[in-house]
Each structure stands twice: as structure tokens, then as C-alpha cells.
Image (cartoon, rainbow, N blue to C red; front, side, top):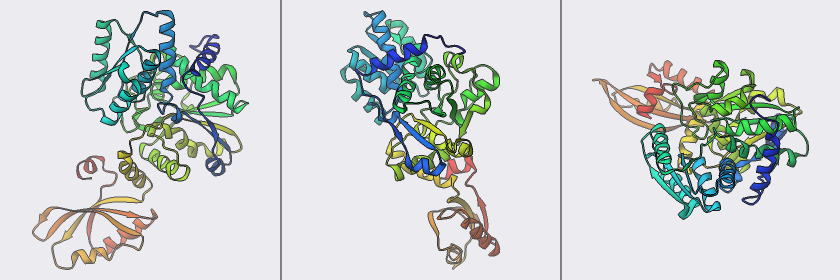
Length: 419
């Protein structure tokens, strides 16, 4: 076991037992819908059902527990986070009766600030600092050094990793046997290194797949380079896993992984899974929490007839984002497109255009942009349909009628400005 001592499984067991004073084990549920779809035994380890709706509480609790045991005089803990780690630390601070100072970017949504404050109560102070996370992190570390606090890292910490390993301990106890495959989301690598560290010792026959968002593949980058590297650009949509650089400690414990072990989930495709799990199963998942389920389609043949556990890592989803999620899902599925139409400036032109829509097509956006010539005007139009193949017939009718158009659905620069 590269980067992991033989004592790690025992430490993971101890962390799991200690967690019981905080909350009961999260459910491991067989999902009939997914099992039928893939012809496999698909189980969901529901980390979206912890008291803070993510697994992050496990690592924060264990790290704080270990520090309080070895240095009981330590009463100030500091972290930098805009999401689940902040909420986990706040909950742990209140449990242990210590003070926590949580630095968040100024741009953090109020809902996340309020939830963190609710979990921590009088035991936490929230400091909004910096427009970008790097600035927030630097401010938190400087404050921590000045005040003599203990900096609680979100993933690159041995005690945090040990706490996250409790997911694997519970999983094995609940299933009563070793699963054939465990699918784990990866951000900084804390959950993945903890769970695999335990299961590789306790269930060596179990295989693993790691899931990263396409726009934040830090584990894949480390595998390809043989060391953690900072990604030049990160898509922040999957905020629970959009990490620019894998941790050094987590890499030491994951350096056995190979390129074939990593699956990449497109951000927009994750939205389809989020909506499906909500509408079909009534399960609320954040983007990172849906990744493990999303990639089952990529390994469908491989998992047929096998027992697979997907870790749904979090359910902190702000429903104000639901329209964006639906939009992304429709565009990925080919059910919604945006066009810039060059509309003739003559009576009846709009009526003529509308006759080109099929019975399953609907106009979801119509905006006059500007006149590009005396006799023509530019129109931004959004079309929704029930079947992706309908668009081929729609564009064919436009071309036959000599309507000039441009499909800008996949033009990131234009849609960012116009849509």
C-alpha cells in the first residue's frame, strides 16, 4: 500500500467508532432504478444524509478530535472554505465547544454563509475575505499563524483522510461483503485516499474508479505527470470537486492509480443525473454528489452482473440553481438550442418563420438584437424540443426557406454574453 501504513485500517476503525457520538452511520441503499438500468447491484452510500449533507464532517471531526486529545489547550481552529468543509468544521466546533474562524470568499452565496453559521452557532466566526479562493486561503493562513490556531485543511491532512476513511468502514460493514467496484468522486483526494486506504487492506479484491469533472481533473493530471500539478483553468460548476491541484498527502496515497481508473464526467451531463435522481428517486444531490452515478453509463458493460457502490458525496444544492441545471441538461441532451437568426424586415417574415417549428418544438427565448442591415435584423432565439432529432428537420426547413442562421449553442463565448 503505497503511502499508507499498516496501522491505517485500525485508525480508520477507531475514527468510525468515535463518529458515533456525533451521528449514526449514513445509509447504504440498494437503488432498484439504477440496478435495473445497468443489470447490476447498484448501491448508494448516502453521504448526502449526514447532518451537514456531505462527508466533510467526518474528516473535520476526526482531525479536531485528534488535536484535542494531543493538545487539549488548543481551542482555536481555522479554515478557508466556501462550502462543505466550512459547514463540517462549524458543526465539529460546536460539538467540541471550541472556537472556529472560517474564512470565506466575499463572493460566497448568502445561503452557504447562513448554513455555516447555523451549524456553528456562537462557536464560529465567519470572515469574508478575498474575491478568489487563493486570496481567502492566504488570509486564513496568515490569521492562523498570528493567533496560534490550528489550520484545518479540507483534504491534505492525515487526520482528515483518516476520518473520511470511515465511509469505507461503514460501507463494508453494511454490505456484509466486499463490493466488486466502488466509484468515488475526487476533488482534492481526501475521500478517495481515505476510502481506498481502508478497503485495499480490508477488501483487497475490490476495484475502484475515480470520477472527476472534465473541467477539474486534478487526479488525472497528477497521474499523467507523476506528481500533483496545478491545472491552468478550472470549471467551477462542480464546486465540491473543482480543485486545481490534488493534495500532496492524498497523492502519496493514490499514486498507485492509473489513467484507466479515472472517469471524467462532463459538467452538463452531470446535470442530467441530478435532475433524474431528483425527479425519479426524490434524491437531492449537488453536482459533485451526482458524479459517481453519472459515470455508470461509461462502464455499463464492465459492471453488468456486479455489485457496485457509488458514493453520493453531498446534497448541498441551492435550488436557485435549478434553472441553470435544467438548461445545462437540456443543452447536453440536444433538446435545447440557441440560434442567431437573420430575420428579413418585412411583413409576414416572423409568421413565416414560426411555421417552420414542428409540433414538438417550442420557442423558449426570443430577443431582437439589432438591425444588421436596412432590410434585416438579428434575432436571438432559443428552441426547446422533445426529441433531439427534431432539430435536423427544423434547420432543414430554415435552409429551404433561405433563412440565414447560426447555431451558437456550443459557442461558449457567445452564449456567455447573449444567453
